[in-house]
Length: 461
Image (cartoon, rainbow, N blue to C red):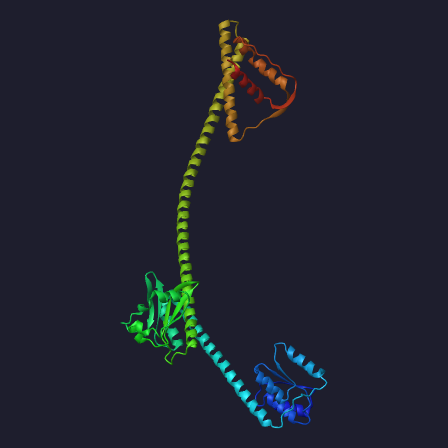
């Protein structure tokens, strides 16, 4: 009514109205506009998302609408309809309200009732869906709470079943899980103790439910004995499946208010789906928990072995360290003893060598005496070289051995060695020949001749 009043106060170029409005709907507005002599020639567009039947379109034309358009999300159809209306030479509708308005009003009332019935049906379906979702959420909440509290789905099944029966408005039900040897009852409610629930463990039924088929027990109750007598005609066997695996059966008796066909079956299957999810989650959780425990056990064993091996290595290291320290101590003793022996031998041998040389220079010419002195001289020189070699070895082991290099002619070095060995070679009827060209080299003038002397001594037969 407000829109009509605004149009009467200020004449518009066109009127766009929804078909479904409170108080005065779109069809009534069309009738009122076409009755008003000041508004009757204004273009009028009727828009709807609810009146979609052909009878609704016919009523819109009879009520005086120029166009009857189903609303789109972007209102593109509405804009296109307005363009068509304004492009038309005759903007007023060809169909005027009939002289007998009672017929249009009667049709309008029928279409309104039809639309209200349709909306009631939609709302009823939405309410049922909301109820189902609420029940599923309630079951999920129970599942989550049970798993968090016990971490064992088999312990939590009784609580899950009780809550499922509450939301399903029934008093009897059971959960049977597939185990080796058949179905086993893990939770039940509302059945006397003498009722054997395993009578539903039939091969033909489990085969059907393994494929995801829900079984209605209404026509089969007579085959179930005491269980059939305890159940109502709307009782269902809902399969519990996850990932293609058959987990078990959810048995639900019909609601106390009576079964409602497909809606009850869909509701029961929705609950079965949530219980199946709970079972699958529990299985996955237990698998992860077992893996975690196995990993913890393996980690503990590994830590034990590492600790044991570390202890063994530490003990071996301590033994090796003691042995190394003992070897170093013995090495130092050896070096100290070698240095002491060399030092103690070097001084008397040097005295013997010098005294032998002095005696050879001053002694009489007795042949036997000179031979003895020469033998003493040669032996003392040999011993002195050996002592010096030992001293060099001891110094090298201590890291104190150094070379004193000088620029020297290599021929001079060989000549010096040849002079020191000449008499000894002659006495043994040997010949020593030195063939060395003059060449300047860097050499230790003390050590190099000694090395050459050692080589010459070792080459003698």
